[in-house]
Length: 492
Image (cartoon, rainbow, N blue to C red; front, side, top):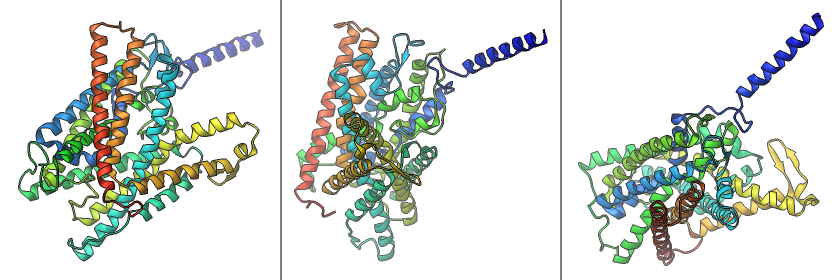
């Protein structure tokens, strides 16, 4: 009798344990998500604010006090609206119980499928390659800026203190070759914390220096219409640079590609590998309310917060320097003193971008290596690995990843134009990833009837943003062509 009772107790305990374990799991079997509006907002803000903020003063200088802030507000509204559409696509079917889509590509595959999945993949990977080039340029000019700031401090502001950025690009490339051999470098738990601290450090320093310079000037500089034609600026240059400014602003705001991952993630490791730097392991808890409703509120909070911060950084930079606003606020030497503060800001940029480069290129590495393993499963060249400390070495990985880093470094040395590259990246990725795919997925997900008022409005929005993207890309390309007329490749 005692044994039977013990068995009953044991069975009851096991059942209670299973129920208790089930209480700590979501409907997909993953660890229960505990995130709220505020944690999701923090994730988005941390992901968005980065090196793109440094070019906003230049962008507003091209457009002026009227159009500059207005365009920034317009982009903020479009980003917010299309992000709410994308949030609806986290689950397929029912917004509370439907199948979860863990990544942007999963959502595209579930809603659109076929050739559009491949198109999305090509655009994503091309964008990541471009971001790697942009980060190489940004990191190298920040390293060069530290050297020049010290030179100006020692020899005076009138000294040219000329130097080439090429050695710093090569140094950055060597560091990335080493780090690229560390398995799952992008998933190191403290990477997101360091990146968040660094990005807020240099952004806040840039804002503070802009405010200080404006006070020293005794008022706001700039004009209602931006840079004036004449004095080295032709009417066509004014047009192209104004269009490029659209791309710079789009680059600063781009985050839709990681929105679904923020909704989906359930572990701190995953947060580091979703193309952004996040600051906690919280993610949106299961319904009610639905994840889409929570994410919509989080998007409103984060876009509003980011827009206020961007307005301050861009407008105070323009107020401080007017038409002479540099395309990179911390390396264009509108500021000379305090030189040590500039050094701190630029060092923070370098540290941030060393990690950011790896986070953004890891998906490309993983894709190529999965494809190679599936294509040649019996090849020792691909499959054989040797672990040496934190490194995972294979001939294929060493060869392929080194070649990739070398390619991004060489392209960066050929086109070391930070503002132009940022504008082009923002322009090329804005329409397809921020507008087109979210709109098309929402139409399918919610069964929006073709020809209805909502369908027409969504299509008009998509078409208008396509025109903006094409125009911004044309402006960036025109500025690159103009710069190449006087620039000698590899001259730094």
